[in-house]
Image 1 (spheres, rainbow, N blue to C red):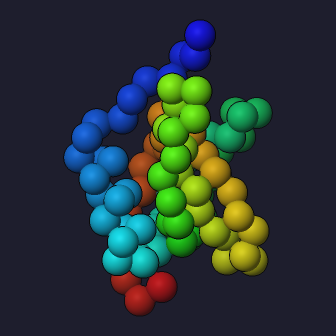
Image 2 (image 1 turned 180 degrees about the vertical axis):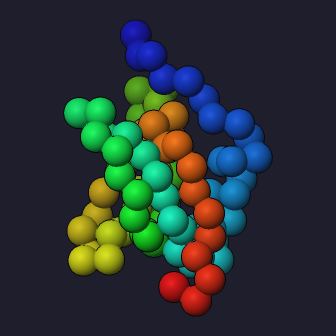
Length: 81
């Protein structure tokens, strides 16, 4: 059983919008080790696996990553990025 906590629907919708509009995001999250991260990323997709939801994104160096949605602590669109 997972400890995943679904995020609010509005946040999910805003992530979908950023993907469709190819809008870069300033994204803050906690990784699996509890480390905090804040980066400008390009959201690519949303996936569901084993009852958990994930954001797939590209970092500035092109590295493809994913973060479980309930580990995201905040995000906002980045103008001109």
